[in-house]
Each structure stands twice: as structure tokens, then as C-alpha cells.
Image (cartoon, rainbow, N blue to C red):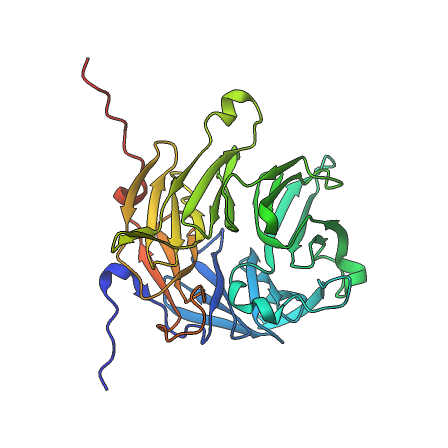
Length: 364
């Protein structure tokens, strides 16, 4: 049987991919290690440059998100409600605690299973400096049980030792993002809560999404001034934290990941946003199978990569911006149907694709 050849324009396909939907992927902040969570109940650790699977961790349910602590450990959140610490060298894990609804129901709702990719349990690792100048790490999880929880991974295993705070949300948590001491929480009902992690007693700001339809992803600008938010209706909003009239006048939204066919507009959900760590430009991935790169300051599209086999479920730039990891994984936006296999592509990033172009001034 002939072996299918991956088009060079898509990037290099990683060996040993997950066997079911890819819920998220993240590059390390220190190396080219890549952590991948999947509905096949696994978290996989790859050396993306060498195309080597270095470790695999199995869970009791679909794994809905993952993140790094450092290059020796990471964290995962699974559909069995567990929050786990993953130890890469020993290929072992321990349970920090559980996040479940007040009624003891599982986080996974069977009636909504086809809308849950990249939604249900999103985690981010945060290290910040307290006034006592001790660096404390906290793990923050959000859930469809309408809560945020903060965990201290230094404690012994068990929720009573590691859970340090629970914060009710207006609706189910769909996406989280963090920059500096600010945490942005996007929920169902188009709610957006902005927290100062130095005082989690209540949100610093409560907002409503400027987009009319359900939120899919939120990601903070690397410079800490605001966030980008995408929806199921092929749009991205560019927002700013500063509430002054001058700052709010800069916010805008734009259409993307859509096409015209037979006289009608076909609109695709925008599942993923990833900011380039050097230039501050950003990539979006949609259910149309395309990855676009945008210059948010100049309101221009810089590049569109060749179409991937199926929906783009997740994106991540490497720490230096040289690599872009692309999860090509059907997200069931059209329900059950035949679809291409789940795959992870690692593509080299050329400067021309991500560097903002200088503005051309009109002739005097």
C-alpha cells in the first residue's frame, strides 16, 4: 500500500499522533518540547524538532487541556474531572484534585459532546511575584460547572491540600488567557470577566463580548494591553483593558474564515488564536482548515497557509517564534461525518509570514 505524502507546504507531520480529537497543544517556554492533549484519553509529550514521542500519559477520560510547568513537568485536565500533574522523566502522574459541579454531575454533558472541543476545561499555569518576593506557582482551571479554581501544585496530592480558591462564574467557562497579573475568562452567554490575580475576590472588569455569537477562544496580547476573542461566526474582536475613551476607540472586530459560494456566505468557527512571541502578530485557525496570520495593529492579513485536511483545533508558536504547531483535527461542527485523520503539523515560520509590514505613507 502506498504511503501518503504530506505536502511540504503544510509542514512536517509528527509521528505517533493521537488517535482521536486533539483538544489542545502547547509549546514549552524553554525548548521545542510540545505537549498535546486528546480525546483518546492521552497527553503526549513530543520533541517537535526531532519528531520524537518522548512520553505518554493515559487518563480515565478524554483529556480536555494541558500545559507545561517547566520542561520536567506539566498539568492536564480530563473528562473524569481530575486535575493531574505529569512528571516527564518518570512517566508518572499524580492527582491534584477534582473539578466538578455542585450537584456531583460530570463536567462532560453527553447532550453537548459535539460542541465541547477546546471548551470544557481550560488550564493555564501562572507564576507571579508576591510582595514578599517569593515566586509562587498556581494552576488555574475553568469548567462547565461555572467555576474557576486555583490550585497550589506544591501541596501533597488531594483536593483538600492543593485547592486554594474557588470563584463562581456567570456561566460555563469556555476559554481562559493570562498576561502578567491579568486573567481573562470567557464564558457562555458572551460574558467576559477580567481578574487581577493579586485580588481574585471579584472581577476587575465585567464585560459582554462585542461579538454577537458564542465565544470560541480568547488570547491576551503579549504586550499586556488587551485580548483577542473569536467566535463561532467567523469573527475576531480586538479589545483593550484600559477603559479610557482613547483606548476604547481603538477596539475593532473583523471577519475571517468564511467564503462565498453560490451567492451565499459560508461562515466557519474560529477555534484557535496564537500570538507570535517576537512580533506580536497572531495566527487564527478555523473550521475551514485554514491558518491565517494577522497584523492587528495595522488591521491587515499578512499570510494564509495552504489548506489543512480538516478543522484547525489548536495552534501554538514555539518560544522563539521559529515553529508553529498546527492541530488538524475535526471539531464536529457539522456533527458525525467521515473526516480526515487527526494530525499535528510542525511548520517552520518565515519572517515574511509574521513580521508586520511598514506603513506606506502617501506621497507628499
